[in-house]
Amino acid sequence: MENLLQLFLIFLKVNLLSTSGPASVGLLYHEMVGKYVTESQFVQAVGFSSVLPGSDALQLAMYIGYAVDGIPGGVAALLASILPPTVIILGVTVILHRLRREAWISSFIEGLTPAISMLMLFTAWKIFQKGGSPGWEAWAIGLVSMLGMLSKKVPERILIVIAGLIGIFFLS
Image (tube, rainbow, N blue to C red; front, side, top):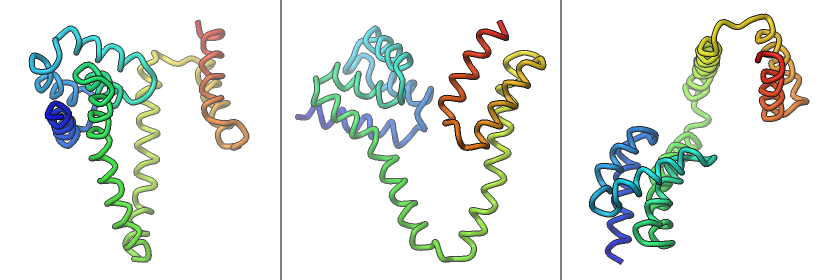
């Protein structure tokens, strides 16, 4: 039982002090290797969590928790990993729900909308640039994808798969 509590507290601390990703992996390495798991177990856990679909941080937590104390360890690590973001989101939701009729909240949301849109556009542009110098074919795929998304008749996931397949056949 003490092992489960220690595991829970370690994953709680890691998820309170990091935003997941590489920062949490480094902190988890420091906290877990040599005390609870071997270095090879940790590397294997990181490898599996990176390959499988879904949240790397949650899969890493479950894998390490399971390696330490079986299914109860996996559950304890998972609960400690999802507790901080869940409590934060619930807290923000309660606050926003109470303040939703305030004029400044509406103005705040209206101000966020163009900023988030531009952030997404900038990110898309950066991704597009990383793919090399795009030819007319890449622009055509982007335009057709955008039109499909704007029409709201084709689900985004389907468009992404179709665009990838077109890229395989026409951009290779």
